[in-house]
Image 1 (cartoon, rainbow, N blue to C red):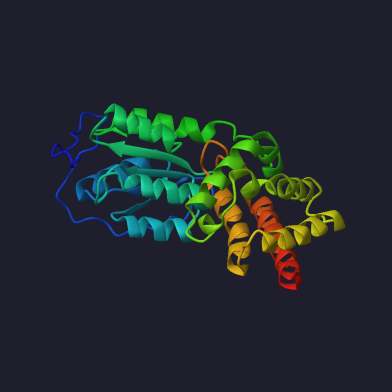
Image 2 (cartoon, rainbow, N blue to C red):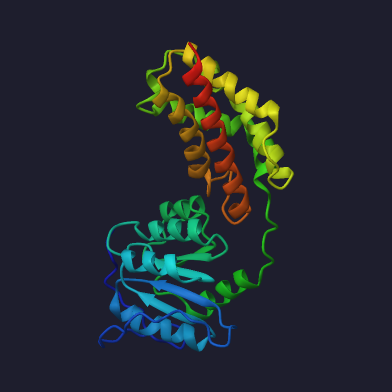
Length: 297
């Protein structure tokens, strides 16, 4: 897919492109704390000269950058309400990389894509990447502004605790973890059937769910006893110490990778405290299991 050679034209609603040098990236600071902060990413300097100015006139505080790396730097240091990124910044589809980074770092940000090609493939990928909307170049300014403001004005989705997601999707999450275990270079060496690879997961999920629902209460003796039994069992199963540790790592990595997907949609799951408790719980399970593994004969 290549950049379109057509430049948006000005008819009262379209952005006019000019030949001036591109502006330096703005700071992204709010004026009076009221203007929505918008990150605009496009490597076409003509569009960077015109569209941000027009968006500023419609009440946005715009930071404009030309490269994926610059966008990632902004995302890591500045809080944004809206991301508007070109589909093909330097390479085909790399606008989705910026969207993915924003969704992980700032899940409440509204995400939009600009594309010169309105094909079905782009629409499907937009849906898969949980975009709020996408616009075809040359974008109709009034339509673009109206849709962005409508998204900003829409009620925020009520956060769902990670415990509820685990309870509702336990089998699906366990299936994803099994797939990851069977792909892992360390764990796939274990000569176990699929059931034995993951039959410990329900008890891990139960312990994590209990901690999440009770605001981070300590793991109870029953949970720690289970972890110790699991360590001794893995010794009998022929696991090395590295395999035992890796097993718990894969659980955490898989849940993290699922964030933003259909099972654990970013912007819906309340991440900060819940994810911290999940990681803490897995770390405790790892330590207790490892100690029992080391003592087992």
